[in-house]
Length: 224
Image (tube, rainbow, N blue to C red; front, side, top):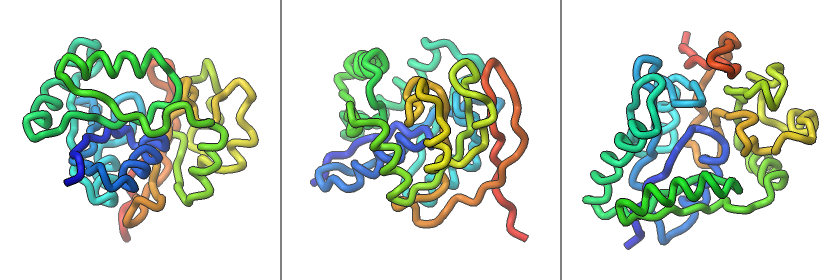
């Protein structure tokens, strides 16, 4: 029997690549996508993507979605408590490992592993230390489609917000920016790719500045 695992899901490209790796591993079975959602905003925490689009992603991926709900401006302690409560519930169902799309930030991996260790759980990092330039190109070549939805203006010009993650964008990224945005330069929303049964239909809305970041407000496309 395949081992049941949880997939820590941001809705972005690194999560998508990590999920693809797990789905291709016959030894693993994804029990659910695990996503932090900010109450009040009803959006994916940090990425700022509407919850309805997250739910459409999960439907297209044909996977259960577990939403970890946290209040606006939640502290680390509040986040960790909410996450711990959900993890304990899945642990009781036989889940002992959680999959992450982290690439090379050791402090982030250490933080995740410390928190999991308190529950005698551990992490799976299928993309760890892979070359990010090659990974970004592979993401595009394999047919994934994504939009930059959040930009840190201290690291990247806000004009990139709302743009398609494609070869043209990669060629225009400054040399200081990681091609996968691993240092927080940008975050993405993936709306299509080989692991999706159908595209998530989105419309680019307004570009807004909030709490030091620029966001592209994606909306679900309404059928006529």
